[in-house]
Length: 423
Image (tube, rainbow, N blue to C red; front, top):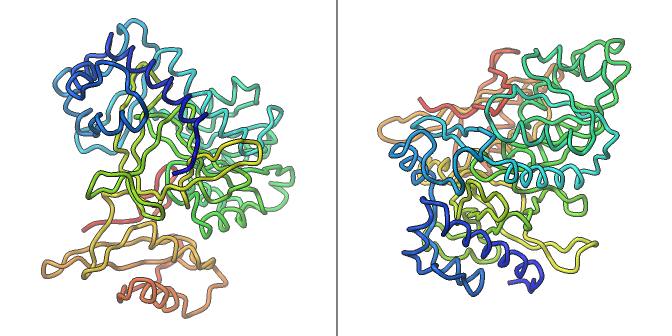
């Protein structure tokens, strides 16, 4: 464990203040804190972790079902709340999330750190290739940019071609989107006539929403499509807000915004702190989003905890080595071998001639099987499918069939990808 008295001291002070507010006004956590013996402030972060039980997504689902529509995880009277967002991905429908002006501003502070870490100055034009639905990440990124003084251009409701044209017309220097859409829009860019994009100025791309942002193979392909633009990763979620950023001195890793989050990585079997070098589940406690806080929230993100000391810091900071490695609930067992979708994508994206791919998971005679479909670029070798199949076999000691499809046969995505299909 790294010695970090200043960082942990500041986190503990914020945690104590937060718990004091929750004991006063948050019905969801008041009884939980009492049962955990946290009627008084914890003596340390470790004391808090040892006594406070986890919060899970199902806890939030059940709370909202029992006390519709917003549940009881509200620290203040409802008339103090001004922002509504909702998450996706739950089988029982989207989960609403409310914020006060103060807690919303705290999340914009986190996005400020993302932009600063990417070296984005306030005079750069930022294009947001989002559809601007109710997802929190879209709005916090956009509003942080405008608050900083950046000219922020929303790209909602536009086709890919129209978005690209807007980026050229209005001299966008920074693009914010998912890794999948950076690839998709990059294909449109590559297919556009030179005279139509003569004023192209894009220098940086900030991606989030999928693990691919920290995969070297995905990043390289994005950068190649965009004529060498720098790619920066970030991650967050509606339930907690913007969580990490990529430090220029430590690429392909995500640094936790520790003045806003107390981060733990747990062994999923023992629920104890994961050992150094061991992968585990990311658990987060919000320290500044007091209006709808989460204590020891099990995010479902598979990560490996490490420490990194920036040149401008007197103490090491918590980093997620390799970024988000996958989702703990996405692992599949294929003939006795544990496989994560991100591991498959890492291998396939290592082939620059693969334009798009799809994985089909089926069950035959009670056993799970995988099959991969790929689209090839115009200069791809004739044996590309065989080469991909060999790499997959070498990596997983499994035979995974790979077939070549016609150009344009596989779906394209503007938000999060759905390349892994279960049948």
